[in-house]
Length: 107
Length: 118
Image (cartoon, rainbow over all chains, first blue to last red; front, side, top):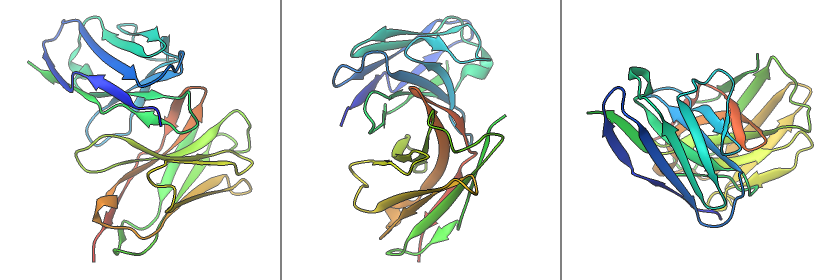
């Protein structure tokens, strides 16, 4: 199994702040990585696929980078609607795995 | 626009079998481009992939659930299904179905809460 480790588990930030979330894979997954946003009571929504490709309709303040084992999700200027939990997920192996999640909270 | 909808009992007794169906509309399930997945989320916890199935019926299961999970697909009804046997309280979760394309799950159902309780 490929393990996915996210950090931090939570972050407090203000509107307008730049926020970065990290995700580390236990082995090389090339660019087979996706990022999701989940709000309470809702299904996750894909933000980024293939490590850095922005899903259609997602604001450009979201960006992804990385390859191999280390990946980053960046929110360039946090907006009120961005307070949520974010998950990474690897798609290299047919046995998919998610990171533990990062909660972005209001400071 | 692709839409997925989970259906099935919201309450299952311990030791029994949890059965859910996902109905896909707005697109065909009969495509080699996609896999169809189940993901679960215990209350207040993170996401856990349960398994995936292709339109040919090829299945992929979470190693931790493999002994208890069976996925199936009915292309004539545009549906795929999940069975989880010998459930316990720790299987209580919101279950989501989703379409997996490339590296990501791009369409999700709204989720259905399944509670395991006597």
